[in-house]
Amino acid sequence: MPKAGRYHEGVPCWVELGAVNLGRARRFYGGLFDWEFVDLPGWTVATLRGAQVAGLIARTASPGALPGAAQSWTTYLAVADAERTAEAVREAGGRVLREPYEVPPEQGWAALAADPAGAVFGLRQGLLWQGAGLVDEPAAFSWSEQHSPAPDTARAFYRRVFGYEYGRGSDGATLFRVDGQPAGGIARHPEAGWSVHFGTADTDLAVERVRELGGTVLAGPQPTPFGRRAVVRDDGGAEFTLVGLPSAERTLAA
Image (cartoon, rainbow, N blue to C red; front, side, top):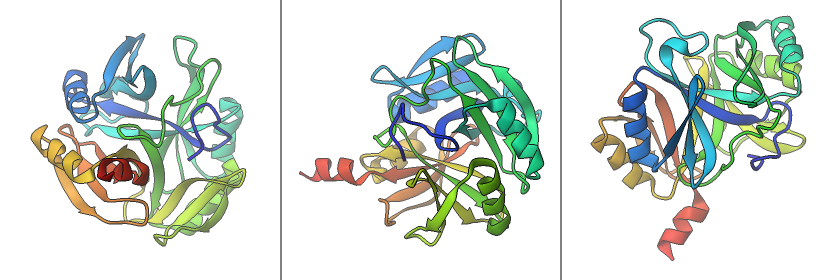
């Protein structure tokens, strides 16, 4: 994905956990990724080596959250104008779950939307904020993939709203591009949603750590064209993917 600080329209730029219990979420992800946490008005920012890598917000305060629902990760897409993009979502057949709102302090604007299949995603318009400060590194956000039971409908929706261009990925999923650069994927799946991937230097060790921290392994680890991958769930019910980064794995083997 494009590097931090160089986000273009429609590129996944931020991920946020709607947590049932913020203290428990901090313990889990701090133990798994060595994240540290900074409390800001209304939300918490996870940092790695001083860089912002993810957000945490209480589930009851998370935009669009249903009472009692399990916690989950949300992918935010970069936009130049949140108001204009929210209107484009409606015109393309999606829904705006929360109208654009200001994110304190001086973090820009955000909104929450859903595509025609019901996959929830966020919009982020930056001012001083430039998105995740680290990407494509161990313990940092590395990829997002839209899952849909009707990929043709999903492709049409995201092309209309964000101007995505499409190609075929090496794993059979659709690769979407922004300004000619790979930015994410769209894959057929019985349940609609956006899957968040975090990089790891050793997927097998990370999976064992997930278990030690009270999480669950749903699939893998198994080899893929992009690195060794596992689908896991944290101890609060949020699903995410761990993927081995080839550069990090080569460093370990050296």
